[in-house]
Image (tube, rainbow over all chains, first blue to last red; front, side, top):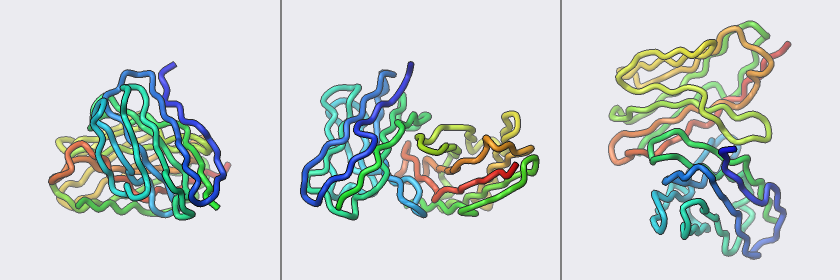
Length: 112
Length: 114
């Protein structure tokens, strides 16, 4: 089944404790992206990747890091999480940058 | 950069009625306008899209209209059913310096009452 898989789906952590949200797609898509969803703000892009070893900032990259060492994986790293990073996070992939986005089921993160 | 405004933020209709959600955008060079539906506990999913060379597109009970002059586009759902209840996001792609990147609206929570 074609899908984008994120883990963990739910996480409660404390300020400053590094965490990684994994994202994997099995559709051989070139383009991958991370979004955060907050009430009243819609979906805002954090980082995106056009291909392996090619990543770039989106609209709200502060406090986040990403890597794209393999085509299928695009982890989101919070080196020192803060409460303002409490949010619902989505990973998405697409055959190309302007194509249909396929979203994962989301990762709800709470930073205390 | 591109700015996308979506209204209303919430919409409640009776089953069988129509629902309309509207989005406005700022960059007249934008050329691709998709709509995504997000069901509870799931990620958004594309339901319909339109490109700037077309004024209207239909797919069964859903349609999208685009007014490039006024820089707005709308999602129309006819004969609404309870399973249409979800959050709907419009998005805009293209425009000056924005090739390929989607800018999303704020979302509309649609409730269809049986």
